[in-house]
Length: 582
Image 1 (tube, helix red, strand yellow):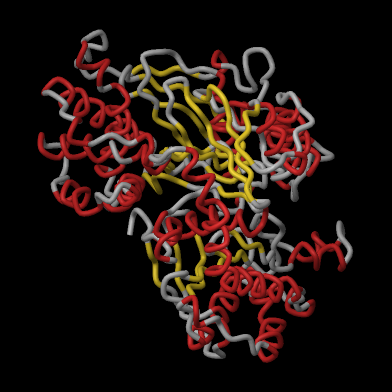
Image 2 (cartoon, rainbow, N blue to C red; image 1 turned 120 degrees about the vertical axis):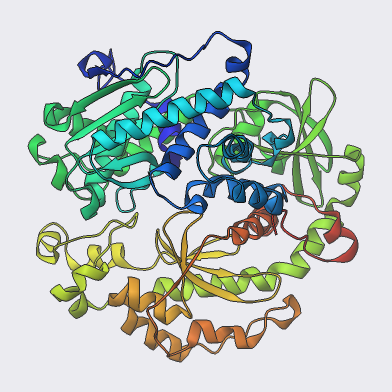
């Protein structure tokens, strides 16, 4: 639902924070270098310097350049500049002048991935001078020296699979060393409570992930290579009550009966998620807006009206819409559209809180609403029905109780709970839950969103709407995916307790893919094949998400009669537009 940084913005911490800055030990380092933070050049490139220092430090620690700059490359794909980005990537060899310049330019693509192409501006405008290059070199060398003092660097850009929750589902730390978890901050200011909460959350997620790589963490902290200062705390000095409270109130884990047992706490507290939703609901002034009470036409409505629609009809939180002057509600033949009008007279199609600039008069969209929506439905309803059929079939599959009870399956995620977290011991789990509840928690989700059907938090099926190919995969992150030759192989490797039930379900499947959507019947082989090969191919391409976003936007017509994305290709040629980053 939220990233770590997004969640922090919603949390009301106690006075001083859960981890007060004054509780951190402070260690100064000296290297004889100074950085002028008052210069105009520094101020212009402060953000880029921070990202470049982080990435180049990772590179100089020996990690592959493709891994280090994976977010940048993913962002470049979103703005159709993949080849340009790869050219920059090839120039990065170390800490020479050309490498640092290329790294700075590459970081300019990050915003396209993290916030969207709307916020991207050309990397050609990023031209750091010698002062900036010198600053970055100094800070990277400081970072390397600091990390070497902490022992071996085990990983960079670290994620916490198994430790995420339904409330906090993403977020990655900077560096993991032999005994410490570290985040780099290049601010001119002292750390604040938001940053100390961030490292607390990373530590809690690392512990709950149950991954062996995190077992030896005994220090967490913030290193500032700009000021050459370390702020840290031994984890033994953090009170169990604090960790238990952060785990429950911030991350949504179940509260331990014994505070000292917060590391062993399993499961999630749905009330925390409900409290978050209620908090968002209180921020909204609800109105009596109901689209069914409007006749066909173009109507002026309030931002609160639109917020009420999002909450009451779409079950989504209210968007902020900071630059919206007013909202136009379009209704034509039971199809709906919402358009944001800015103070400068520009119009944007609304998709929740996301906006897409419109380049034609509002009347054009109103007049073509019914034709457009009906074209979408005529083309894609069979595709969506096929995905729903897959999801429905997956949801019916029962886990095999005997396999769940066998100890050898513990190493291959034999039992899972919602959110993808491993359950290490069957005995400890069954003490808390009866079989029916455990069975329900262990089943496949079968949730359909865009072009993707979820087996669970980490395992998915992608159905390509362009050529009908089907890709079963295990996602470590949005960028890193393990692709399997067929669905049976994915299930055998990641969810073996579901394999017998899947085999029975597979024998009953006779549904053919609808050929009018370019989906060929032979693609079913990836779903129905009996051949099992648990090897997988590591893939970093994110093209499936671009296609899925297109289909998810169009699917609102199927689900809610709501048009929240517009492509003239569909209106005039009955064809699906190509993803922007293909």
